[in-house]
Image 1 (cartoon, rainbow, N blue to C red):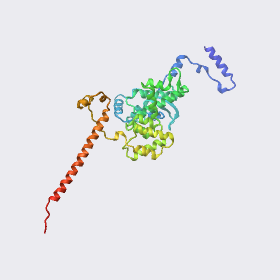
Image 2 (image 1 turned 60 degrees about the vertical axis):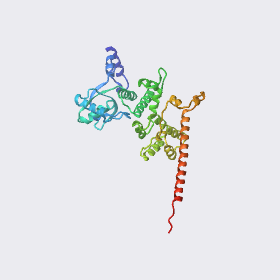
Image 3 (image 1 turned 30 degrees about the vertical axis):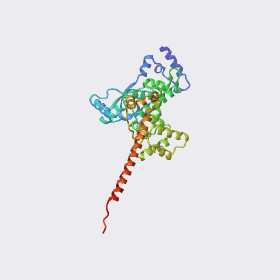
Image 4 (image 1 turned 135 degrees about the vertical axis):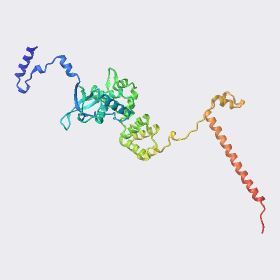
Length: 353
């Protein structure tokens, strides 16, 4: 093997370009060396060298879970290295910078409790940007319990687009569509994945309303087909009315229909949003069993024809008939009161002077 390397060095030494002269013993490596080189590299870096992953869909929130993580790190330190990939750029201090794949929350806690000069351990993964995108979204989707709908949608969209670029398309003939692969991994149906991804096409203001529960997912999917400017019109209309009403699924479908026709403007938005929704109307609920209702019927009505009666219509007609009788009784009482008043006036003797 040594003779072979020497021979290769001689060949490179005879190359026309002196810059091509290489020591092949530094190039030819063993399998063990190649395996070791492919392992993630660990090192200590300053917090300022760690950057948020581009378009990171998972917001870092100072909630109860963050408080628990802070207490744990205060007690035990950061035990797990932060997973990163190189950005290929340097910061203002001339230091290499890294995109965080997993560990945004740990970095956030470190910024809160540690001195800026305290260094953190990182593990540099040998991944392409698209591979890192998939790793970042997968680790968060599988490790977090409570994920708002639009946050999940943005993550799934990033993942499916990255997989599509890696595969050269959104189709993998061996195992089905990219969407179905992701659905299986996330314990969702392909249809659910498609719905979540549609939410990522909403403007940020509408996404916030969806994630807060003000607008339902089915309604939001319909709204996602509106253009950005049309979505802004809708949001501004709700804002002007102090968010007293949010679009129903029926209204969202109407908005989508007019958008598809190219005729959705502020006047149409206002007209549709002004419609009274079923949940804004008061309803009277009355429940009675069919058997009890039949027991109330006189015997002569107990015929086969009675079985075909629409009970809702029957009860409504009975109520209307009762109202008509009440109106007739009221009119009769008014007439009696007027007649009695007239009689009293006639029977009262006048005083003459």
